[in-house]
Image (cartoon, rainbow over all chains, first blue to last red; front, top):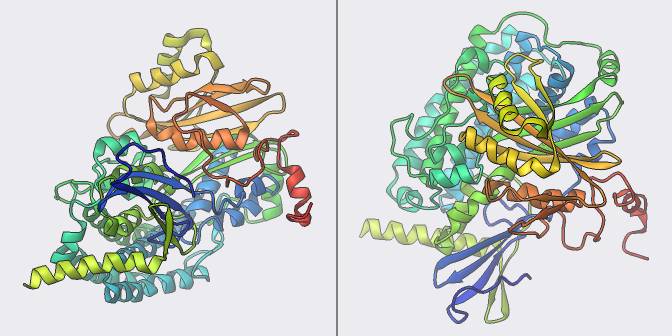
Length: 417
Length: 168
């Protein structure tokens, strides 16, 4: 285990390692904290546990094969990565996407945002010790997964993106079921908001916990709900309107736009994400209303498309607002069958450094909820190590989780007394 | 709007900018690509942040271009009003025998992860980087091998010999 250079008093501080198992989402990430008493004094992290070399693999495949590889970068963002990649290729080749395909892409992307944010809300409730809320939210999330299956054929890794369009149309008959589901979510989000935003104990755990100031968010290049909750009004859908967003006028949601005070804490991140679910619901309904008829792809015949891409030269970037923030793909084509260079910047990559100001000064029991509040997306493991006076004490994820639950229970007791 | 950004660079840096091109192939996309000289790279980045305080660093990418290594720093400039984002991509070539580039973390602290990644993936040396450790490669990954390189320092040999496992 790595020892952190000492800055404070050796007797009063000890090193506390969390991971490679993530304390929150069971992702393989190792945190090393320097603790004095109950407070975090220094934060360090290591991410090298699951680097899979996907970009390297990509430079040995043709652009169509990469769509499916990009889809497997992340289990949740499996529209976001192919979306950004397709936009990058379209930007290099100058391909115009038919309007109907743009709407279908948007609907799929927004459905993904709904299910990702609901999953996050469930996990956040779990980290705070409200497992009944977790089960309630995950039950509500099933409906959106059913809708995704209904229109694409799969719950995850949908295989619907294609360079220059999409692979499956949404038929008129399917509209009713989607709109019904959206009505259901309007009600559900209200209920979930009541639980997560109005409950006294949840508020006591989340307000003023894990604060990221606006200046820090800008300085550390944070993206997505993490940045927006700190008052940074940035959203790719607003700043570079693409797909159907250019017909819709989407506005980035910050606590200020919904009339709340901006603190940049865990509570604000919850607030922004729940508001974004409502926004996604509205976007989907709007899209279904105004979707034009027409082609769904620039070119139906894949071999023909591939042959065309073979002669393309140049470089380009593609962006998309994924549930966690901006995803960016850079590609370089040199008139070859395969890609010359491919770089993927997932949103968590940009949000990593924001953990440091959030976790400094926090209590050990707050680590899980703060780490989870940025909705990190890396991968998984399950172990934590404490080093105290040179001796290693291994505590697992469950024990750390228990600490968090205990804090909630203690707070609840105080409220009842 | 992109032209304004380009003009401001040309005024400030003159012939230090080797190549500049504006790309707006797809509707709504504004992309500016600049190729700058290695010795003036930091000045270019400084100028970008001075002239456009609403600039955000996105990521740095790079590739092995046979005779040299090309690094690309991707930035986004928020334009005024409803004009949206303009993407400014600064490309710089570094020679393979002396691949050194100054850090920009004093201007954008958020660039640290990207700089650490460039060091381990391309074997570039970032001068004055606050934290030179690896970030995405594990500590037991062989030293002197850089995954994004296409020459003898690339990972081809490791991949070819994968079947041998840990046995020597």
